[in-house]
Length: 316
Image (tube, rainbow, N blue to C red; front, side, top):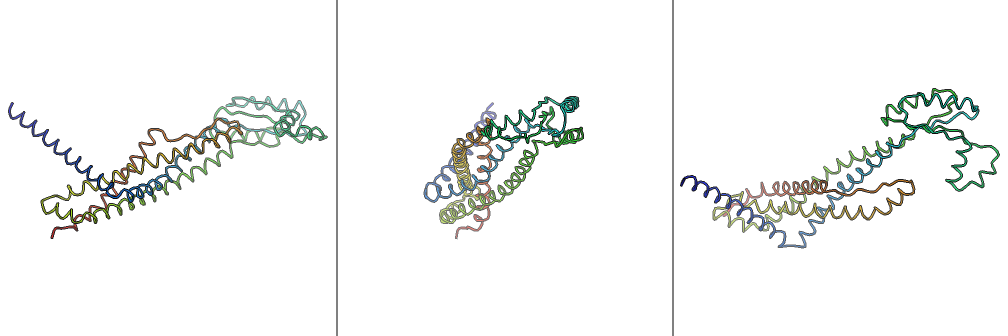
Protein backbone atom coordinates (compact mmCIF):
# COMPACT_ATOMS: atom_id res chain seq x y z
CA UNK A 1 0.00 0.00 0.00
CA UNK A 2 2.83 2.36 0.87
CA UNK A 3 4.64 1.49 -2.36
CA UNK A 4 1.48 2.18 -4.37
CA UNK A 5 0.96 5.50 -2.54
CA UNK A 6 4.61 6.43 -3.07
CA UNK A 7 4.40 5.63 -6.79
CA UNK A 8 1.19 7.66 -7.10
CA UNK A 9 2.76 10.64 -5.36
CA UNK A 10 5.85 10.34 -7.56
CA UNK A 11 3.63 10.29 -10.68
CA UNK A 12 1.73 13.38 -9.52
CA UNK A 13 5.00 15.09 -8.67
CA UNK A 14 6.46 14.33 -12.12
CA UNK A 15 3.27 15.56 -13.78
CA UNK A 16 3.25 18.77 -11.76
CA UNK A 17 6.91 19.38 -12.65
CA UNK A 18 6.12 18.79 -16.32
CA UNK A 19 3.26 21.30 -16.29
CA UNK A 20 5.35 23.76 -14.29
CA UNK A 21 8.15 23.66 -16.87
CA UNK A 22 5.73 24.20 -19.74
CA UNK A 23 3.90 26.94 -17.85
CA UNK A 24 7.23 28.65 -17.22
CA UNK A 25 8.22 28.23 -20.87
CA UNK A 26 4.89 29.68 -22.03
CA UNK A 27 5.30 32.72 -19.81
CA UNK A 28 8.85 33.20 -21.07
CA UNK A 29 7.70 32.90 -24.66
CA UNK A 30 5.01 35.49 -24.02
CA UNK A 31 7.64 37.71 -22.41
CA UNK A 32 9.76 37.48 -25.56
CA UNK A 33 6.86 38.84 -27.60
CA UNK A 34 5.83 41.54 -25.13
CA UNK A 35 9.37 42.84 -24.59
CA UNK A 36 9.27 44.52 -28.00
CA UNK A 37 5.54 44.84 -28.79
CA UNK A 38 5.89 46.98 -31.91
CA UNK A 39 8.27 44.53 -33.56
CA UNK A 40 6.06 41.60 -32.56
CA UNK A 41 2.93 43.29 -33.97
CA UNK A 42 4.71 44.03 -37.24
CA UNK A 43 5.84 40.40 -37.50
CA UNK A 44 2.31 39.17 -36.78
CA UNK A 45 0.91 41.60 -39.39
CA UNK A 46 3.32 40.32 -42.05
CA UNK A 47 2.51 36.71 -41.20
CA UNK A 48 -1.23 37.44 -41.27
CA UNK A 49 -1.04 39.02 -44.72
CA UNK A 50 1.04 36.07 -45.94
CA UNK A 51 -1.65 33.67 -44.70
CA UNK A 52 -4.56 35.76 -46.00
CA UNK A 53 -3.64 35.47 -49.67
CA UNK A 54 -3.78 31.67 -50.14
CA UNK A 55 -6.55 31.20 -47.55
CA UNK A 56 -8.72 33.88 -49.14
CA UNK A 57 -8.16 32.54 -52.64
CA UNK A 58 -9.07 29.01 -51.55
CA UNK A 59 -12.24 30.31 -49.89
CA UNK A 60 -13.26 32.25 -53.02
CA UNK A 61 -12.54 29.22 -55.23
CA UNK A 62 -14.61 27.07 -52.89
CA UNK A 63 -17.50 29.50 -53.37
CA UNK A 64 -16.91 29.35 -57.12
CA UNK A 65 -17.15 25.55 -57.09
CA UNK A 66 -20.39 25.77 -55.12
CA UNK A 67 -21.77 28.21 -57.67
CA UNK A 68 -20.88 25.98 -60.63
CA UNK A 69 -22.43 22.97 -58.89
CA UNK A 70 -25.64 24.95 -58.44
CA UNK A 71 -25.61 25.90 -62.11
CA UNK A 72 -24.99 22.32 -63.20
CA UNK A 73 -28.13 21.15 -61.44
CA UNK A 74 -30.15 23.44 -63.71
CA UNK A 75 -28.36 22.60 -66.97
CA UNK A 76 -30.59 22.51 -70.02
CA UNK A 77 -30.29 21.72 -73.73
CA UNK A 78 -31.78 24.08 -76.31
CA UNK A 79 -32.94 22.35 -79.49
CA UNK A 80 -33.52 24.93 -82.26
CA UNK A 81 -35.99 23.91 -84.96
CA UNK A 82 -35.42 24.46 -88.68
CA UNK A 83 -37.27 27.68 -89.70
CA UNK A 84 -38.89 25.88 -92.65
CA UNK A 85 -40.34 23.09 -90.47
CA UNK A 86 -44.12 22.78 -90.58
CA UNK A 87 -46.36 22.40 -87.53
CA UNK A 88 -46.75 18.69 -88.25
CA UNK A 89 -42.98 18.24 -88.44
CA UNK A 90 -42.56 20.17 -85.17
CA UNK A 91 -45.11 17.92 -83.47
CA UNK A 92 -43.28 14.85 -84.77
CA UNK A 93 -40.01 16.26 -83.47
CA UNK A 94 -41.59 16.90 -80.08
CA UNK A 95 -42.76 13.28 -79.96
CA UNK A 96 -39.28 12.04 -80.88
CA UNK A 97 -37.67 14.17 -78.16
CA UNK A 98 -40.10 13.06 -75.47
CA UNK A 99 -39.47 9.43 -76.45
CA UNK A 100 -35.83 9.78 -75.41
CA UNK A 101 -34.85 8.41 -72.03
CA UNK A 102 -33.42 10.33 -69.04
CA UNK A 103 -35.47 13.47 -69.69
CA UNK A 104 -36.99 15.29 -66.75
CA UNK A 105 -38.94 17.87 -68.74
CA UNK A 106 -39.42 19.17 -72.28
CA UNK A 107 -40.80 22.67 -72.92
CA UNK A 108 -41.69 24.04 -76.34
CA UNK A 109 -41.30 27.75 -77.11
CA UNK A 110 -42.74 28.81 -80.45
CA UNK A 111 -41.10 31.47 -82.59
CA UNK A 112 -43.84 33.99 -81.70
CA UNK A 113 -43.57 33.24 -77.98
CA UNK A 114 -39.81 33.52 -78.17
CA UNK A 115 -40.02 36.94 -79.83
CA UNK A 116 -42.51 38.11 -77.20
CA UNK A 117 -40.31 36.90 -74.31
CA UNK A 118 -37.26 38.54 -75.88
CA UNK A 119 -39.10 41.84 -76.22
CA UNK A 120 -40.29 41.77 -72.61
CA UNK A 121 -36.84 40.93 -71.24
CA UNK A 122 -35.04 43.62 -73.28
CA UNK A 123 -37.75 46.30 -73.29
CA UNK A 124 -37.71 46.39 -77.12
CA UNK A 125 -41.28 45.20 -77.65
CA UNK A 126 -42.31 48.32 -79.60
CA UNK A 127 -39.34 48.07 -81.93
CA UNK A 128 -39.76 44.33 -82.50
CA UNK A 129 -43.43 44.86 -83.45
CA UNK A 130 -42.26 46.81 -86.49
CA UNK A 131 -40.21 43.86 -87.78
CA UNK A 132 -42.00 42.17 -90.63
CA UNK A 133 -40.48 38.70 -90.26
CA UNK A 134 -39.74 36.95 -86.98
CA UNK A 135 -35.98 36.14 -86.97
CA UNK A 136 -36.22 33.75 -84.01
CA UNK A 137 -36.70 30.00 -84.51
CA UNK A 138 -38.90 27.72 -82.44
CA UNK A 139 -36.99 25.94 -79.68
CA UNK A 140 -37.40 22.97 -77.38
CA UNK A 141 -35.94 23.42 -73.87
CA UNK A 142 -34.87 19.96 -72.74
CA UNK A 143 -34.14 19.38 -69.03
CA UNK A 144 -32.05 16.19 -68.59
CA UNK A 145 -32.57 14.07 -65.52
CA UNK A 146 -28.88 13.15 -65.26
CA UNK A 147 -26.38 16.03 -65.15
CA UNK A 148 -23.34 13.89 -65.98
CA UNK A 149 -21.29 15.77 -68.65
CA UNK A 150 -20.63 12.60 -70.69
CA UNK A 151 -24.32 11.70 -70.79
CA UNK A 152 -25.23 15.28 -71.66
CA UNK A 153 -22.85 15.30 -74.61
CA UNK A 154 -24.26 11.97 -75.76
CA UNK A 155 -27.77 13.42 -75.57
CA UNK A 156 -26.67 16.44 -77.63
CA UNK A 157 -25.42 14.08 -80.34
CA UNK A 158 -28.74 12.19 -80.35
CA UNK A 159 -30.77 15.39 -80.54
CA UNK A 160 -28.62 16.80 -83.37
CA UNK A 161 -29.33 13.67 -85.44
CA UNK A 162 -33.12 14.17 -85.27
CA UNK A 163 -34.86 15.54 -88.41
CA UNK A 164 -35.80 19.23 -88.65
CA UNK A 165 -33.22 20.20 -85.96
CA UNK A 166 -31.13 23.24 -86.89
CA UNK A 167 -28.72 23.42 -83.97
CA UNK A 168 -28.43 22.05 -80.46
CA UNK A 169 -26.87 24.12 -77.68
CA UNK A 170 -25.77 22.73 -74.35
CA UNK A 171 -26.13 25.49 -71.78
CA UNK A 172 -23.67 23.69 -69.51
CA UNK A 173 -20.65 24.30 -71.73
CA UNK A 174 -19.70 27.68 -70.26
CA UNK A 175 -20.21 26.26 -66.77
CA UNK A 176 -17.78 23.45 -67.60
CA UNK A 177 -15.25 25.98 -68.83
CA UNK A 178 -15.67 27.95 -65.61
CA UNK A 179 -15.23 24.76 -63.59
CA UNK A 180 -12.03 23.92 -65.48
CA UNK A 181 -10.73 27.44 -64.87
CA UNK A 182 -11.51 27.12 -61.16
CA UNK A 183 -9.61 23.83 -61.02
CA UNK A 184 -6.61 25.48 -62.68
CA UNK A 185 -6.73 28.41 -60.25
CA UNK A 186 -7.11 25.98 -57.35
CA UNK A 187 -3.93 24.15 -58.34
CA UNK A 188 -2.14 27.48 -58.71
CA UNK A 189 -3.38 28.49 -55.25
CA UNK A 190 -2.06 25.26 -53.73
CA UNK A 191 1.37 26.04 -55.20
CA UNK A 192 1.14 29.61 -53.94
CA UNK A 193 0.13 28.35 -50.48
CA UNK A 194 3.19 26.08 -50.42
CA UNK A 195 5.53 28.94 -51.36
CA UNK A 196 3.96 31.33 -48.85
CA UNK A 197 4.07 28.60 -46.20
CA UNK A 198 7.82 28.46 -46.71
CA UNK A 199 7.85 32.25 -46.39
CA UNK A 200 6.07 31.96 -43.02
CA UNK A 201 8.69 29.44 -41.88
CA UNK A 202 11.48 31.81 -42.89
CA UNK A 203 9.86 34.86 -41.26
CA UNK A 204 9.24 33.05 -37.97
CA UNK A 205 12.66 31.42 -38.11
CA UNK A 206 14.45 34.70 -38.67
CA UNK A 207 12.45 36.40 -35.88
CA UNK A 208 13.26 33.63 -33.40
CA UNK A 209 16.90 33.59 -34.50
CA UNK A 210 17.16 37.29 -33.68
CA UNK A 211 15.51 36.62 -30.32
CA UNK A 212 18.08 33.91 -29.55
CA UNK A 213 20.87 36.35 -30.35
CA UNK A 214 19.22 38.94 -28.09
CA UNK A 215 19.16 36.47 -25.16
CA UNK A 216 22.66 35.18 -25.90
CA UNK A 217 24.12 36.11 -22.51
CA UNK A 218 21.08 34.83 -20.62
CA UNK A 219 21.35 31.49 -22.42
CA UNK A 220 25.03 31.24 -21.45
CA UNK A 221 24.13 31.79 -17.79
CA UNK A 222 21.40 29.13 -17.91
CA UNK A 223 23.87 26.66 -19.43
CA UNK A 224 26.42 27.49 -16.74
CA UNK A 225 23.98 26.45 -14.00
CA UNK A 226 23.11 23.20 -15.80
CA UNK A 227 20.19 24.19 -18.02
CA UNK A 228 19.69 21.80 -20.95
CA UNK A 229 19.14 22.78 -24.57
CA UNK A 230 15.60 21.39 -24.29
CA UNK A 231 14.84 23.67 -21.34
CA UNK A 232 16.28 26.69 -23.16
CA UNK A 233 14.59 25.84 -26.47
CA UNK A 234 11.09 25.48 -25.04
CA UNK A 235 10.29 29.21 -24.52
CA UNK A 236 11.36 30.02 -28.08
CA UNK A 237 9.13 27.23 -29.40
CA UNK A 238 6.23 28.74 -27.48
CA UNK A 239 7.10 32.11 -29.02
CA UNK A 240 6.79 30.54 -32.47
CA UNK A 241 3.47 28.95 -31.49
CA UNK A 242 2.17 32.31 -30.28
CA UNK A 243 3.28 34.02 -33.49
CA UNK A 244 1.46 31.35 -35.49
CA UNK A 245 -1.69 31.49 -33.35
CA UNK A 246 -1.92 35.29 -33.41
CA UNK A 247 -1.27 35.52 -37.18
CA UNK A 248 -3.85 32.80 -37.88
CA UNK A 249 -6.48 34.60 -35.82
CA UNK A 250 -5.76 37.94 -37.51
CA UNK A 251 -5.85 36.27 -40.93
CA UNK A 252 -9.28 34.76 -40.15
CA UNK A 253 -10.57 38.17 -39.03
CA UNK A 254 -9.24 39.90 -42.17
CA UNK A 255 -10.79 37.29 -44.47
CA UNK A 256 -14.14 37.48 -42.65
CA UNK A 257 -14.13 41.26 -42.98
CA UNK A 258 -13.25 40.97 -46.67
CA UNK A 259 -16.10 38.48 -47.28
CA UNK A 260 -18.59 40.76 -45.51
CA UNK A 261 -17.33 43.69 -47.58
CA UNK A 262 -17.94 41.76 -50.84
CA UNK A 263 -21.26 40.24 -49.76
CA UNK A 264 -23.43 43.22 -50.76
CA UNK A 265 -22.18 43.57 -54.38
CA UNK A 266 -22.17 39.77 -54.86
CA UNK A 267 -25.79 39.45 -53.67
CA UNK A 268 -26.81 42.36 -55.92
CA UNK A 269 -25.10 40.76 -58.92
CA UNK A 270 -26.68 37.37 -58.18
CA UNK A 271 -30.11 39.01 -57.92
CA UNK A 272 -29.71 40.45 -61.41
CA UNK A 273 -29.26 36.87 -62.66
CA UNK A 274 -32.20 35.58 -60.59
CA UNK A 275 -29.89 33.69 -58.26
CA UNK A 276 -29.90 33.36 -54.48
CA UNK A 277 -26.13 32.84 -54.32
CA UNK A 278 -24.26 34.26 -51.31
CA UNK A 279 -20.60 34.14 -50.43
CA UNK A 280 -19.88 31.63 -47.70
CA UNK A 281 -17.24 32.68 -45.17
CA UNK A 282 -15.15 30.56 -42.84
CA UNK A 283 -17.00 28.00 -40.75
CA UNK A 284 -15.68 26.64 -37.46
CA UNK A 285 -13.75 23.80 -39.13
CA UNK A 286 -12.09 26.22 -41.58
CA UNK A 287 -10.94 28.48 -38.74
CA UNK A 288 -9.56 25.51 -36.80
CA UNK A 289 -7.72 24.29 -39.93
CA UNK A 290 -6.22 27.74 -40.54
CA UNK A 291 -5.10 28.01 -36.91
CA UNK A 292 -3.65 24.49 -36.99
CA UNK A 293 -1.64 25.32 -40.12
CA UNK A 294 -0.42 28.67 -38.80
CA UNK A 295 0.53 27.23 -35.39
CA UNK A 296 2.35 24.31 -37.06
CA UNK A 297 4.29 26.69 -39.32
CA UNK A 298 5.15 28.87 -36.33
CA UNK A 299 6.35 25.87 -34.33
CA UNK A 300 8.55 24.39 -37.06
CA UNK A 301 9.89 27.80 -38.04
CA UNK A 302 11.04 28.45 -34.47
CA UNK A 303 12.33 24.88 -34.06
CA UNK A 304 14.48 25.15 -37.20
CA UNK A 305 15.88 28.48 -36.01
CA UNK A 306 16.70 27.32 -32.49
CA UNK A 307 17.93 23.78 -33.23
CA UNK A 308 21.28 24.74 -34.68
CA UNK A 309 21.68 28.07 -32.91
CA UNK A 310 21.70 26.76 -29.33
CA UNK A 311 24.49 24.29 -30.04
CA UNK A 312 26.76 27.17 -31.04
CA UNK A 313 26.17 29.03 -27.79
CA UNK A 314 28.47 27.65 -25.14
CA UNK A 315 29.47 29.28 -21.83
CA UNK A 316 33.01 30.58 -21.79
